[in-house]
Image 1: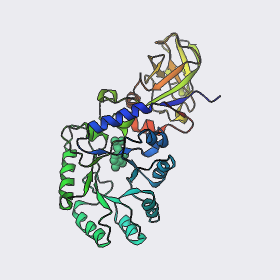
Image 2: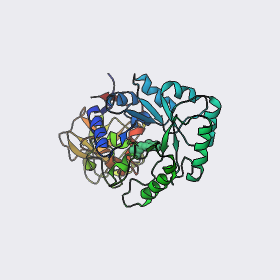
Image 3: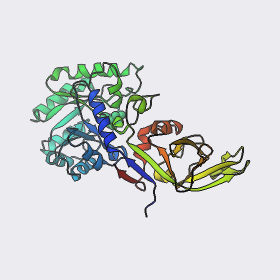
Image 4: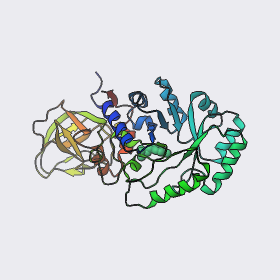
Length: 358
Ligand SMILES: *Cc1c(COP(=O)(O)O)cnc(C)c1O
């Protein structure tokens, strides 16, 4: 029998969240970002669940695009990092993958390969990770036109650094830099808009938006949870209670003896740990739930298990299922307790945890 530690994936919730993104996208079409194994939910089942809804997918790299084809899906797939070798352009042309070219090196690969995939150009509007500076854009486009790939150049992409913070002025600044940079190339498509941009009033999303985390029910906005933004949790991470005991006042639990009982405390051990991707930084008082009741972690998370205080759930028995995050405890809450974001928790669930689809 497999261990009952499991990530239950609600594909109906995923579809609802995709439709929520569409309703917030203005006139833009919505490509579903399914990189990092569908944010830890399984790229094949996630993409298949969006078949018939999402006209386009976006991933980081070629391997992920191929995984979408392996799932039997034919939608075009944007490669957000472009290609990592010139030879990959042949796979793009053949596979219907649209690399986002962000460097002179990648343009040279395109020139030398003789391959003609449809592609995008990345504009650096201020995030300063990847992309062509607006000053250099006209010469890059001219070079591409001279190469005869005018028709394959679909349009321009940029990415926001601070869209998670509605008080930041940076998104508006990046938007205007992007508009000015692309204005000479009227008629090409434009794509901006991670999940957060869908929650900024009056933010233009142009032709294609690119939501990721919101599809999975995680919050893209600082200080807000997914459910507060109207998003449905998609992953419910569950593990069985495998032992219970009363720890006498004054005794400690787990590595380092970091938590000491201040009174006799009924506690339990749960079969999940950082070896499953549960964050070790989640300390005492991080919430979990059992039978719909909220409980709390105590002591340090180990590789294969963690401890919970069962005071608030006196009926809890060995074999009961503990929810680490899901409907009762939001993944954003756990992330906050671990000093990180839901993205890292969801993508960090390891292969040891079974994914079960509903
Ligand atoms: C990952 C990514 C997205 C999606 O971001 P979320 O914050 O998860 O919505 C969009 N665009 C690019 C370029 C990305 O790398």
